[in-house]
Length: 264
DNA sequence: CGATTATGATTAA
DNA sequence: TAATCCTAATCGC
Figure 1 (cartoon, rainbow, N blue to C red):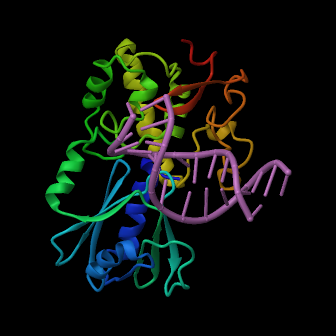
Figure 2: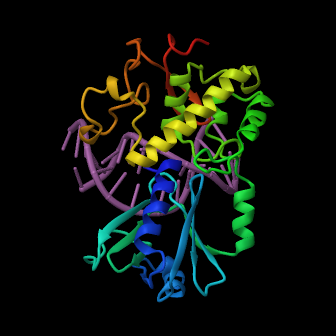
Figure 3: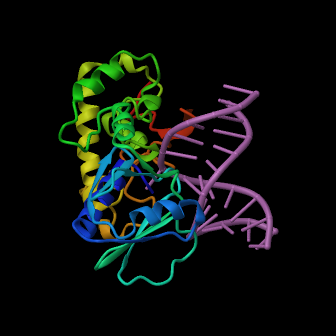
């Protein structure tokens, strides 16, 4: 379930649970046993999110833990002491009150601070970070002949947006995903960035992607079922005007849009 | 019980 | 563009 909002929320929650505490680290899977052994018994300093990347700093360790969840990776938070691990667990971090289990990540490795800097340097501005520079986003989009639907998924252009948010953001701002980046007006790009910041912040707060306005929801956010609370992603008709959505394949993934709200 | 699917990204062709 | 990796839930038979 990971787009940028998920990773930022995890960083925040791990900081609350683990920062300043000595951690028992272990691994069920042999593939990260050595890494877990290296972390075991050290004090967790802090976690940092950059787009969809999570970095953890540890006291008295020169390396940084780098985790990228990919499509299916998950961090599961449990009360300490935790039950025996269920399923595939790449890494378990046991803190005083809460334990975090990592499964199915695309990347989980100890890297050097230089490698960390290199990863961060290759990312576009992250709308969830206060130091994000919107002008970089404007420049990246405005200079490209690629479709805006592809640009939003490209982490070099803007870091943290995934397949759900790109569809929802373009619907909300009223932009057809097939339009060239350089064909967008300055005002459209500005509104796209502003809406991205607003939606991802809401996502962190709710720990869930709910793009639909509260007054349009059929039930409270807390009781939404999966897939509800969105305008076009996995919807048959546009949640704003009722027009049947149309599907495109952009950037190798499916994206739905509303022909009425998002004219070509 | 096997096939399918998923909010990701890289590599090869 | 297709194949590939990683895991678990869901769906059809």
